[in-house]
Image (cartoon, rainbow, N blue to C red; front, side, top):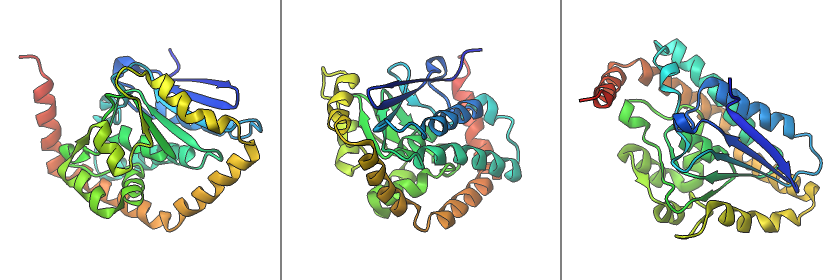
Length: 257
């Protein structure tokens, strides 16, 4: 079986790629575990300056959870267990001791948006959109992304995105502060990413670790209660009949005519 994540380390830059383009890089538990393992294993490399997390293909950075797996999750207790497991993987990304850049090769929606916001910075292809659209399935954010979104853009914009289920294009996402840089039309994501990361290559690794340590200290402040609240609300929403009805509507839309 093909490994869901491909890693490489070149010139002080760790690159981790979700390699499931045929599934829109859906975040199965095995994929999330592989992402966490890749970050955990690389954390001890003394010569690292920055990490890049991206996806294969050009359509999706990372879809939400794997629908086949999620269909087996029944009831509030199972939903909370699933969310807790997945949140540990995204926590490994957040806690990585060096800055992490999400290179959005395609759309980051739902759980994919949560993964993108677990990273410290985001560079997007000219067509890559982002959206917290969990409400379309009658559920909330589950993997810590709600807290990340509110801290990054403020409660007003965060509530706007989540309650309206907005999908932002790169220009909108940049204005809101979600994207640090965007490839212009005709410029590849690789070129835009290299331009963004190039100054970081000249930094001393210990200096990069120091910068990240300060950011991480602020990010962790009062985090536990936010995570507890999000997980509890997600479990309740998952077990609610509104979620079942939303899933049924989605599956009916996917059936061939």
